[in-house]
Length: 229
Image (cartoon, rainbow, N blue to C red; front, top):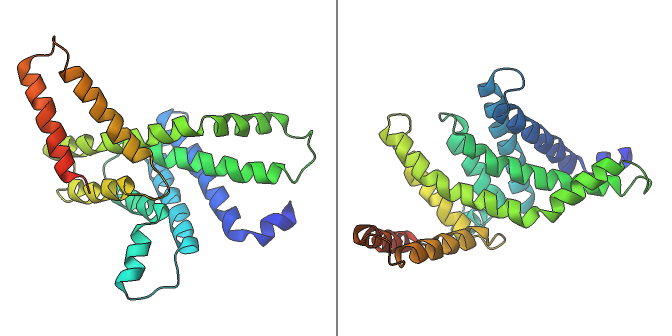
């Protein structure tokens, strides 16, 4: 195992960073020890480190060209690097840690499974069971992360009007959502938007729904459709 970790230094660094991210998220959400803001910043910082390494791995050599930039913004790791930078110096919003922590947990479990396969089959049974359970819940966790990313948009806007946010954050975060929506590797954002639309259409089509709510619901759907990339 030591030789494997040495030969895969970047993967090992990301594994350690993801573990720190997960623990920092837990320590922030559950007030176990220390100053909560420190755990929040550490989780965001480690998420940015992981995303930057992953972006470096998946990106071609740097070129000052439109093609390079287009390929860069299509990478999911770049999306979350931007996500971490957006909220790194921002006022803490607890749901921000959900996507960061979930992706760190999933990828950390994947690498942990690889390490466990290098050991004897009967060892670390509890850890094997934990990683297997996380993998079984992967789709549910990914959907939850995508839902959180969508719900963060109105939260960011509300925080802006309450005097606690940057005026640029909603516009940049909208671009982040557009990138997630058009992601080639992750369809969950599109699925979440589709499910939200079906839910609104179902609720507004019920006879008991007031007319003004029905009108608002349809106008809201049309507004979101116009913003859709």
